[in-house]
Length: 302
Ligand SMILES: [Zn+2]
Image (cartoon, rainbow, N blue to C red; front, side):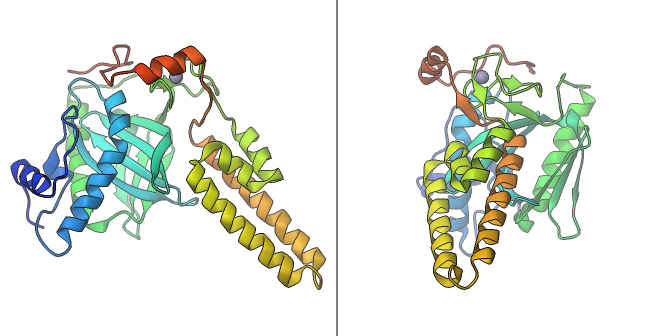
């Protein structure tokens, strides 16, 4: 793949009438890797949409001299939840993609907390974190692997050379979805803004009674609605086809379905923070936030 320059990418984006926020410092040539070839306009538009989805989050959390170097996504192994991530010159920032919505939960991982980035035997990128946890992403675009490794290695090395090692409570730090400050791993409450988060147990129990209850609680409404349609079709099909001849089998299928939904809801909630309650005054302050940099960020680099 021929390398591109920032100017070439910028003129291509302008040609397609795609404009990223001028408030964010992007290294365009390692985010948009191609500007020529088959279906290139479609690929650029898809990548642009991905970057645009996470821009509101980036505006909240990026530090003064932080530059966004790489943006992509992949499906987490085991639960296949899609994760959008950005590599900056300081860290990795992640969030969930649910349908056409990007949002909670959010994480930040400094390079000092990432011990290695390797490929699995299926050529999926796999991050190994210092506290023993891992993040493997399937369906990651293979053509982006060399750039991902290159950006990671160089940024990580630069971080080490400066002997930076910010204090953390765990490698993958949770970020509050209301005030965007780091919430330590000590529970379901944000000390900074007073927001509360759903516990895995609460969502697990809701999903056990009614699988969509958990989804409607923590997922975007449109996504939960689509899941509800699937559940109704599944339920009606099972009832119509098997209710009379195999009532025990039908009951068993529903029990298994509810137990699976409960386990999935529990696991999702255990992996990150989903907002439950936001104090009224904090919500108002958040609505008025103008996107300027957070003056109380835990660690400032220059
Ligand atoms: Zn908060």
